[in-house]
Amino acid sequence: MLDIHIRLVSRMAGTRFLILRRQLVQSSVSRKPVHLKTFLLILVMVIAGPLGNVLLGKGMKQAGSLAIWPPTEALHTALRVFATGSIWLGVGSLLVFFLANVLVLSWADYSYVQPASSVGYGVSALLGYFLLSEQVSPLRWLGIAIICLGVLVVGQTNPRSLERSPTGMERSERA
Image 1: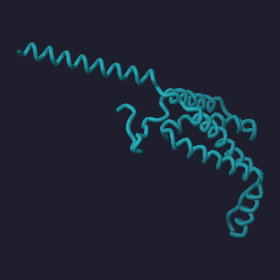
Image 2 (image 1 turned 90 degrees about the vertical axis):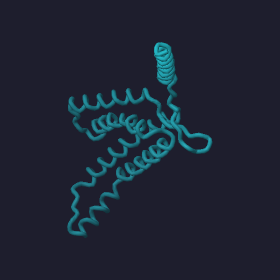
Image 3 (image 1 turned 45 degrees about the vertical axis):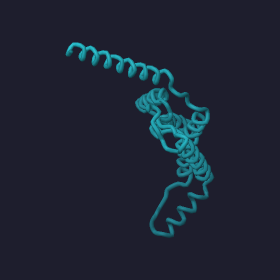
Image 4 (image 1 turned 180 degrees about the horizontal axis):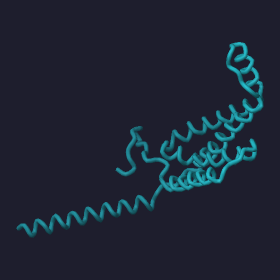
């Protein structure tokens, strides 16, 4: 009797293992592709964010030395900063980045979007080098290359780990 019970449990465990293995293989093979809208908005984020920051940096360099005390000097400083065209272009670019970020986060996971948009670090270095004439050290380029390699790894995962059911409740795709 014990021998029959052991064989039955062994057979059930083997079957369960095969089912789990099949599910694992199917989930790794049938990963959902990134939608075009997700890709395009992450591309907008990767360009608009660093461009906005570089334009702000350029505008602040154009504004010159800034004083915040006494209050009359702070007002003069603010007027000088906001009279700079690069500042306004930078603010506009950062608003585009913000809107793209909000939109893409509405349909993709933060844990996917943020690393995927980290390619912007490379764009920042390139813009700093070409537009601001900054020197970028080889060690910094190596760090940026490592970040971009991480983006390639994250890009191999599904952009959304949860899907919405018809009732509006979230459920795991693995369930």
